[in-house]
Picture 1 (cartoon, rainbow, N blue to C red):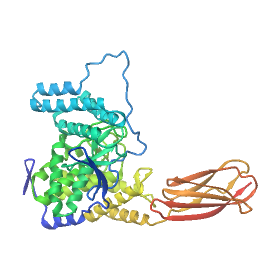
Picture 2: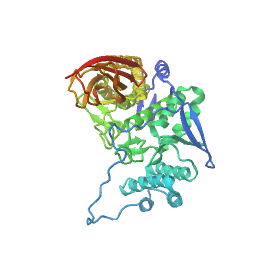
Picture 3: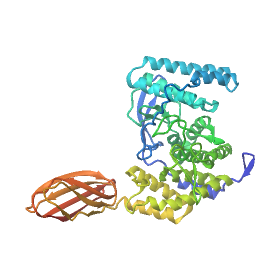
Picture 4: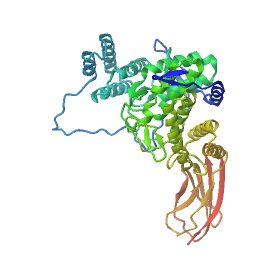
Length: 494
């Protein structure tokens, strides 16, 4: 039996461990990554254990950066906290040592000096990281627990922007000798990709025992970067994103972290990993903006971003549940089981509303792109394997079928008035690129164009038709998976 937080937790037996191991799949595609060596030399490569897709998508319709509130010009403000003043305060309060104070102060001074020497994008990106650090200090959130990750972010950005190339947006970045995954967010610098790093750990576990030492090294690097939030250990994000201000966190990244710790235990049988996973649970018990739990009549929804509690992103919710389920099964932790039960009840009730009958929704009213449709299908298949719950299994089957089902079209407009620009309406079953051809009574093509549309009732605006008569409308659609369909109908012009 394994002690966890002063209690006794029974670890899962061999049959369950084997079943969990079989259910874990390695990433389907290797992701490209830029790796900076010790002398600043950068090489491009592909890592088979990294997630290939973008792991931190913004909520649909969210702004790229938060609005900034300005205080009145004549309002007297208290003295503003700064990075330097907060480090001094922590030193005087004996919350950091003099060695730490000197190290962090030197790091900050070096970053400021580098930013002054740099120009263009390099200066802008490093300045953004410094600004985020300053804003966290000004908000009184520069706690001792956050210092390691914040100053590692600062040091790595100073190194990158002083000698590395300017990467494309959302490029993955690594540093030689480290297992941590970083990502370039234009205007925010290079930031620790918590979800991607833990997903890499999961991929290493799925890759087999030969990869376990690398997975252990990765987890060992991530553990000290957790902070105390909601009364437990949490991995946070420290940049502005989709309207959210740092520090914020995510149920998806936290659930994936718990899953990585569970797999580290399965690989090593070191009970300390289960102890840490238990300490990472409290974030699921507290509502936003601190935690990720939104209470519902059936249980709870665990949200993707603590700064948008009303946003329900189904793939993130399901992935957080997989992490809770695996840990609960392995550890027999009562709190984890309770959290799983609450989330599972809500997810089963919500899931049908994310099935349009032809495709999946990313969040209510917003269709998945192809990669997220495949992602959520994979999560549903994993939940089906684990629980055999009909709604998970059936929805997974539906989503798989949609990958090979052509879009359906229906012409809605039946008549138009001549000599007036008009809209030709049609019904579309799923997001597709749609083309229209208008053929006149004499058989000549009068107009054609194409555009991409989401599911539902949509329309093309066509030029005025000059003559009365029967016109032929041809519509063709190609969905995100490449499935094609077309129809032909007529409208009467009077």
